[in-house]
Length: 406
Image 1 (cartoon, one colour):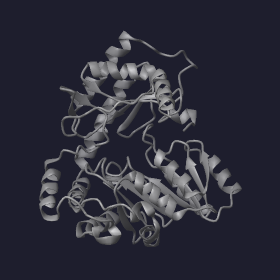
Image 2 (cartoon, helix red, strand yellow):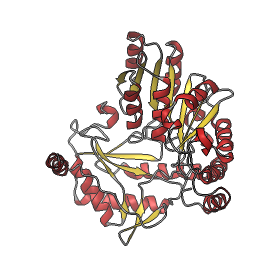
Image 3 (cartoon, one colour):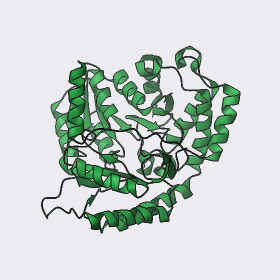
Image 4 (tube, one colour):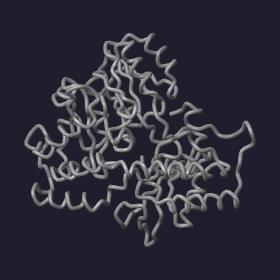
């Protein structure tokens, strides 16, 4: 068995797919320290720059002194403490995917999506999922034992056809709101309409939209969408700057999760101190219009500079700005060339993205300055001049959207 594992790992190395962990010796911020060197980092999902906020640090320290460092048990035993309850009420009122919505805290977005799909869907049900959904939505669908159909990325006509041909007992349309590797936004208004036409639920993973869109309320709020058919998931370790996730939906949906969702029932609750710190984070998100406006300006500045590069820029108006390189080894080479210049941008390769669409995933944060964006762009200009690699017309590698892969 060890020989087989060694051979498989060797194949990954040969294909340029080995992943390496960086040991970060500093708090998350626009600049981080790795292996005794400081880097300008465009790699985290700390979209509002709150992960090292003095206000949140103070809130967490104060809460730890009051509530301790651990919950001690699951929410269903004695782990559900007053800060958890208060945060759930505040999140439900803030996001409000439907009238009288409730919210439920979980320890991570991965667990939240597993909880939603395994508690609500079963053997006689059907799940219809965008091909570029996050892996945890796919895993949740598989674990639910419902039938799984994957439609081409954001292709509502294909989705309608699949729903028309399938007559599952319960049917679920499942999608990211903002796709984590492309940065584009799902056609949520159309998806709600399709759900209504076909008597289906719509499960929305807004991990990368909560805190950023809709005045912080998320992508649904940005589009003015609310429905009892929506099951909304948002994460609290990205724009909110702390940790965890939540589900917001109709009270009957949330109570079903409380009673039957194994990832919720059988997990020790996150510390009450984190929930208390998140209540402070939620206030900062509510008051974060200036942070969001600065983020919009950074995105515009970055995209303006990207027009000069030989690589394809993803169709994204969000803080996720993918530079599609195509070849995995070439994406790694550019990432390493940036690191040599003191800038961290991760190279994303298969299986996270389809073969032929390896990329640099530039992640912008309100903590960045316009000069930071200029420094990144200057470095990419220099790398492009030193190693020009434009593909001839008609031969450019497709983006993940164009490839329709997963």
